[in-house]
Length: 424
Image 1: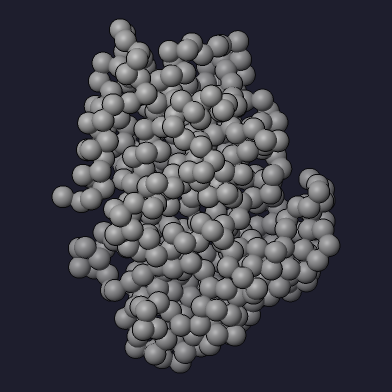
Image 2: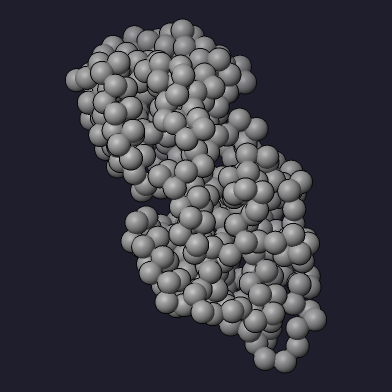
C-alpha cells in the first residue's frame, strides 16, 4: 500500500474543523478546471473528502474548461451572484481578479480557523496570493517546469554524473558542452523543447531572465533598465542551441513529449505535470531509466518560473455566505491542503510545508529531487495583464517562436516585445 494512501486514510479518520457544526449536511458548490491525470486525482480527493465528512459536508463538484473560458465564466457568474462557493484558481490570475472585485479576502481569522499560515508556505508562494498585504487564496501546489532526462542516453554519452544527474548543470558553457556531447554520441535532439508554442516557452525564457534578476515589470514599467537586455540574453542562448542542432525546432507540445519518450531527445524541458506520464510508462515497461531535476543554471543563480493552483472564494454579488457555509468552505481548503500528498502523485509540489517535509514525500522520486527549486521560484509580475492566458503571454509569445527557431534575431524580438507590451 503506497505511503500517500496510508497517510490519507489516517487523516480521513481524524476529525475536522466542522465537528462543532451539527444538524443538516452543508453542501459546498465547487468549480475546478482540472483535466487528465490532474482531474482523476482531484476527483479522488473530493470523493475522499465527502467520505470523511459524510453527514456534515458534501462537495458538489463541477469541472469546467481550463483557461480563458473558466475565468470568463467565473467573472460573469460572480457579477450576478451565481458563482460557486469555492473554486480552483491560478495564483498568476489573482491580481486581475482582485481588480475585478470577484474574490473574497481570506482573513486572518480564516487562516487561524483552518490551522494554516504564512510559515507553512515558501515565501514566494505566500506572496503570490497576496495583494497589498491581504491574502486572496489558499495555495495547493506549485507547478514549475523541470528538466527531464534519459539516464541511459546520458550515461552512454558520458554525461551522467555519479549522483545520477546530468553533468554541466552549473553554467551555460558546461550545459552546452553536455548537449554537444549528446549530439556527438548520435542523439538526434539533445534537448526537446516546445519551440512551436511561445506561450509555453514563456516559462523557460522567464526562468532564464530570473537567473539574471531580470524583471518583466518594475514599478509599472515593462522591461525597465537592463531587463530588456536580460530578456535578449535568454532568447539568445535558446536560439543558439537551435542553430547548433542541440534543441528541437518548431516542436509542439505532444511532439516534444513524444521525442523524449521515444528516445529521440535525451532531455526535455516540461512541466512537472508530465511526471505521471513517465511514471506510468516506466511501470509498464515502456520507458528507459529517467529522472527530473531543477533547470540548469545558465546565468548567475538558480531560478525557475512557476505558478500555483490555489483555492479561492468568489465574491458573489448580492449573496452573503452564511457562517455555516464559510465554516464548511474553510474545512474544505484546510483538508485539501493537509491531504495534498496524494496530489503530489500528479507531479506538482504541494504548497503546504508539512507535507513536503514529510518522510512520505521525501520518499517520492523524482518529486523530492526537484522540490528544492521552491526556494528559487519566481511568479508572474503583480499586474492584471499577467497570468495564464493573459495579454503579456500573448504579446511575448508572438516573437518567441520565430526567435527560438532562428528566424528572428533576439535583439529585434526584444524591441518588438517591448513596443507591444508598452501598448498594453
